[in-house]
Length: 389
Image 1 (cartoon, rainbow, N blue to C red):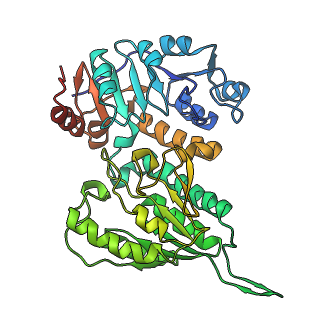
Image 2: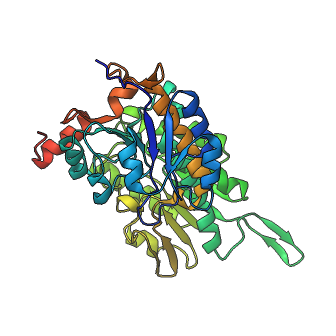
């Protein structure tokens, strides 16, 4: 089963409208690659923010659209970072192709709206974790940035040195950092904290990551094995309440001694698992810092307030949202490489060619021809009693 476009297809890049979003879906270097593949490219004026000028896009071969409506109406394929707003959805007409971070397991109303409008929609957060899709894996790219930035956020709030310092006034011991969750974000947090000279410990429900943690110079905290903790695709899966209780007892002992705690645990489409209770936070030394990278999914820390920084019993708890957007130059560059590589994967003979037998294409296609195709999203819709037709 395939779908092909005739003539020269136009790829449109609108300016992101979500609050706090400083990334752009395509940077000038990727425009060159899409032009070489046979696409026309239109970028909304100002889409590159203060980092990629309209002139840079024009030099790369793109046309500049005066406003979002011109970009949406003139483009066959729309590339975005964030899901479309209601206003943007209104500019998406039948036959258009949308590629973005749609988060379909959460944004079910949007999925149904895209199906109703007969939009062919692909979600970059549904890229399968297989070897040949690594160059398209936006979640890994953005998680790496978030892990790096989380340590900088923590270090800037900590009233201590990160490394050991030998001074005339005496030796200052290094900060102790505890990282909960050793996926891409956690591993980058470990690496960054180690580069800053901290002593690092890490915990993850998946014993398979122990070697990676130790290769970065951190100590892996091992829990008593009780049940399989890794789901398909290499993600952590939600565990039983008894298992979680025993893990929290182990975590509590290490949280108590940490200067910095960074939490990164996520379960796709579900509330983030609770790892650090209010009791644990109150048991930490005043002046300690927590950065909860799961804040967008209600947080791994009981006292986290998404989007805010709170102080509980002298402990500073950060609940940052959209952390990759705070490093917009490299975040946009990596996102652009991921999404352009994905689009080129869908391209054959200078146009769009959808081979639904291909795993990458099949797993990422959320809606097509008025139907919801993404099986995990269909399951969520069924659980919610929401119609798919």
